Image (tube, rainbow, N blue to C red; front, side):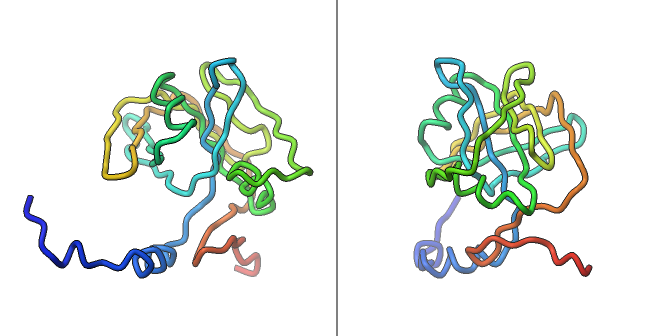
Length: 164
């Protein structure tokens, strides 16, 4: 693949601001640590990949959760509801005293009991892309409840407009 000078010239701040104009949901990716305790991390890079077989992916930078998922081969994804902004902050390294996670252990991965939707995922493919790793996984179980999602747009949290 040929890379032109134009690819290298993208201003990182401009790129960050431009990509922030794409609204995303907020989720917690989770796994068990070496002591079998649930660990979670806030993500906005979660997407469905395939319906048959049901597959999703998360994109993670190297770190503790990344290492645990790579080693264990399983992860959970808990999609946050519109009123769960404190949960997003809690799992992004800013502990919130009012957030007390209650985990439901599925076959191999924990998920948050209060989630809008959850997925239990077995890693199928691992792809290194620049400074992130894509963990593509088959969904082995999932469920959801009715409600509105927590969203992230223009570097801020949002809830859908209830007026429709």
